[in-house]
Length: 179
Image (cartoon, rainbow, N blue to C red; front, side, top):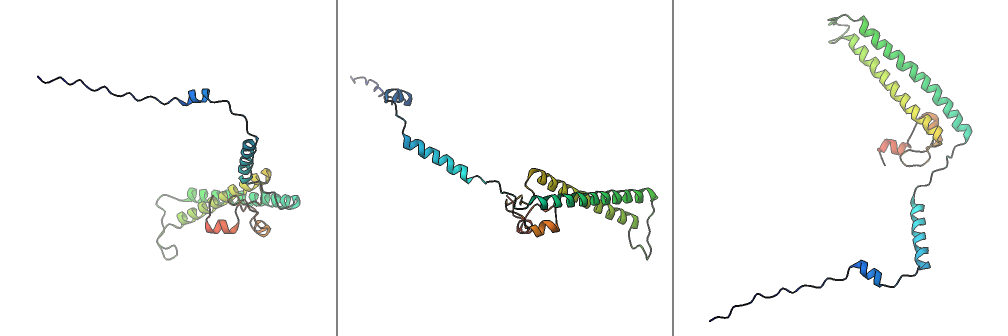
């Protein structure tokens, strides 16, 4: 008779002591002053990497003059936007349905419609300029007027005199560099 084989017992692996128990068993670590100093140095290095606010290189007199210019130009653009919008609306009111001219003078299209579209485009452009001017006025109040919103570098004074609402340096505006 063949002897019956008994199934082999599985060896149970001993668990490694958990880290919690090791921490309990290990002696308490004393604070290391060198480690604390290194940690503080690391924190201060990361604080140094954060961009520091750029001090406005322009005097208050220049900024006040620019703010006055912005307000003047804003009023002009607001007036133009309103005028062009009203003119476009008046062209729509004066027009009769089916009023299309096809003669030598007007070409192949409706001249009133072309004029209306032009007036609406001019009005929209003026409104966009007002928005840019409002953003520049907000930068004046925030104390960041004249600082490029993309690079954080000062915008040249000449550019600000030419375009008071400029938000970027020329190289960032032309090249399309973004954050």
